[in-house]
Image (cartoon, helix red, strand yellow):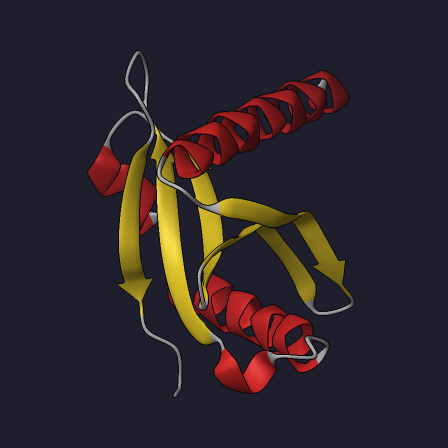
Length: 122
């Protein structure tokens, strides 16, 4: 039973990330990475528009408030550490501006993009 629920959640997550990517591209972002994995964790989407890099956490929830609450302190630290690794590997990292965003995938609505959902250490 648990594996079926896990498979369903995985598919829902994939679909949510796909919708989020479409919404960001409609706003002029270029998706530079999906499900960026490191030994420290995973970033759902990394999007770029000009020199701005958006590290995007995608949450499929019934409401925007629930989606925002789902990115807790522990998750923020994990996302930040992954972002640091990704950024260090970019040849033009000194010119890039990093931001932590959320895309909430809500029922029967266009995904909601929340910029600067949390601020990093910097």
